[in-house]
Every structure is written in C-alpha cells, then in structure tokens.
Image 1: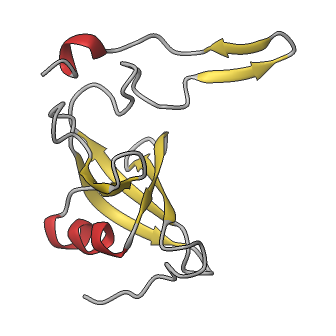
Image 2: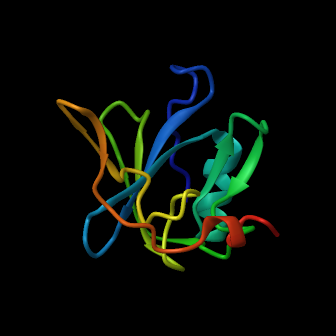
Image 3: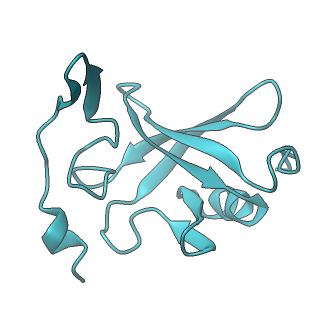
Length: 126
C-alpha cells in the first residue's frame, strides 16, 4: 500500500491523533514524519516522531502500552491523520491517565476530569 501524505507543508511533520477505535475517545496527539508513517504502515503499531529526542518513537515500547492500528483516516489536505487504535494497557498518557486530554478549561483554570489509571512512576522508571 502506498499512500503519499504531504509532509512538506509543515516542515516534515504532521499531526497524528490517536483515537480509540471502539469508543472514539481521543487518547493523544503526536507528530509523524515520513519514516514513522512508513513504520506504522509496515508494523501495524502506532509509531510517532519524538521532537524532543529527534527519533522514531513506537508508542508503548517502554511501557508496554502499545497502540494497535485498526484504521487510519486522512484529512482532505493529506496533512493530518487519525489513527483509530486499540490501546493495549490501561492508558496512553505518560502521566498515568488513559487520555492525554484529562483536563478541562474552566473560569478558574484547568481542572482534572479523569483519575489516573496506572502508576506512571513505576511504568516509566524502567
């Protein structure tokens, strides 16, 4: 399969939204480059590009909380994707929450709307 995305428009990186394939819950957003896109297609697991480490990052490689690709949606401009995934393990967020979007904006600032589902300190201390 060969799907050509427009990586040039945004300097080589495009947003990739991870969404639970059953519930449609948005779990996280990260970036992909051409190499991580090809690895995702090849492996069947969500693989992103880490801007801070400047390397490919297979989600769940260290935590065991892998993301199995079920479907991929591509927007009309070919510069954003949605990975419809099965989240293995209790959560996608490195803070211990299921979703990275666990806070809501209120008049008083940010309020947490979800409890943590795993101990991030134990999972990421490996």
